[in-house]
Length: 77
Image: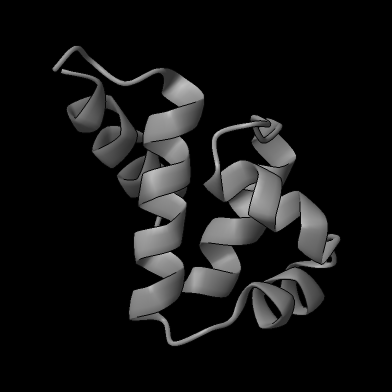
């Protein structure tokens, strides 16, 4: 199997982090002041977050944005 695209890899990381934080898509959306459908699009790899959005999500999830980026990069390999 080939490497994943950046949006696909990020979506997988986001879904995993959200699950570990025991948050629904709706809860994550509300706490990060984003739309729930946008969270779904991110998790399915159909959209990519801006830098500001990445930091919002990381803050709500209680992890460093750099951790999300490094995990995304690892999935691309």
